[in-house]
Image (cartoon, rainbow, N blue to C red; front, top):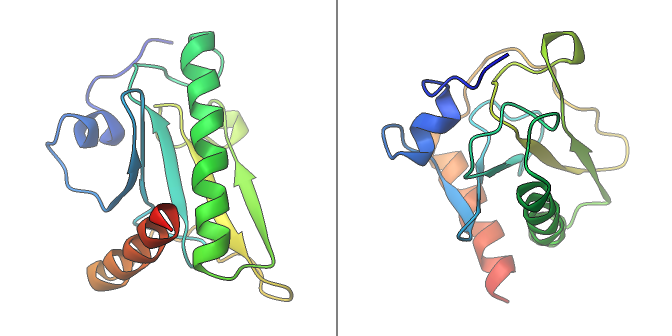
Length: 140
């Protein structure tokens, strides 16, 4: 399958859609998931066009992995989480919904299950506050 330049993450990268950025490098962008499955749910994406892990360039994948680790450490600290769930889906059968490579970083707490993916958007002020907490942890 080919890369779709009109996917929502491509639009975010071009500045056509807003996001709550938490981390950015020359090759990677991390921002709050607007339909979080837990407090502090962040998406980390490569800036390069890649439908999923199957067609990503190795260099882009390496940079993505490095950034996932940076963001994961900050998210865990920012929310005083007990652990983290890191997820990455490939193709519809694998659970992928947006066809631009992305990694979910979700702070986790003992006894608190992940919220279901209902499609319900989080309030903008909550996302802004969560992004600020992670950015603060990144700069500490």
